[in-house]
Image (tube, rainbow, N blue to C red; front, side, top):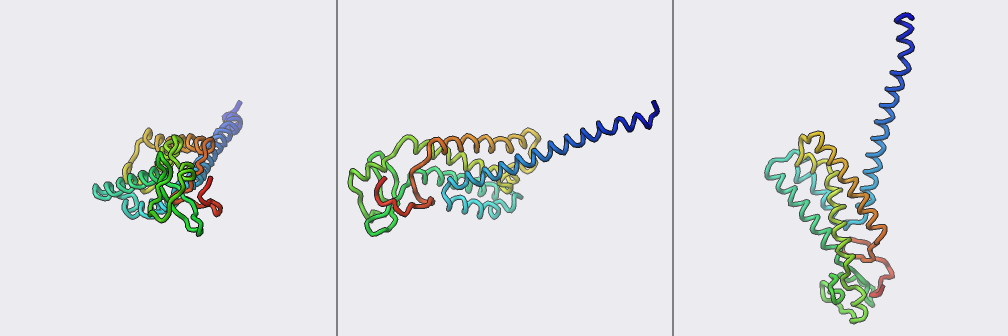
Length: 209
C-alpha cells in the first residue's frame, strides 16, 4: 500500500475527530447559553430593585473589572449589601387597604408589622401573615441565587479573580449552575406566597390570603 493511499484512508478518521471536537464545543456553548437563560429566570425571583441596583452599580464600582484595593472593597460591599437586601426583603409582605393603597410590612411571629403605621390589621387577619420556617428557606435560597448572579457578572469575577487558574475557572463556571438548579427546585417545590418590597403586588391582594 502506498503512502498516498494510507493518507487517504487516514483522512476520514481525522475528519471524524475534528467533527467530534466541533460538536463538543457547540454542546458546551449551548450549555453556557442555557445556563445564562436559567440565571436570568432566577433573577425574577429576587427583588427587582436590588437586582437593578447591582447591575447598575457593579460596572461603576468595579471600574469594569479592573480593580484596585479601594474599588475591590467597594465592590465587595455592594455584593454584601445586595445579598442582605435580598435576605431581608423575603420577610416583607404587602396588602391593599380598604382605599386600595398598597401597604408594606415585616412578617413577625405575631403577624404583620406595617412599616409606616398607616393602618392596622385585625389580629385574625394579621396572623395570616405571620413568620414561618419556609420564609427562612426562601431567604437563604434568595441569597444563593444572588450569589450565582454575582458569579456570572464578569465585572465582579474579573475584580476578584483577574487571572483565575483552570481549577478556579471550573468552580466559577460550575458552582452557579449547581446553585441555580438547587434553588430552582426549592422555589418550584415551595413557592412563596409573599409579595413584599420589590415584588409585584396582586391587584386583589386586599388584606387577605
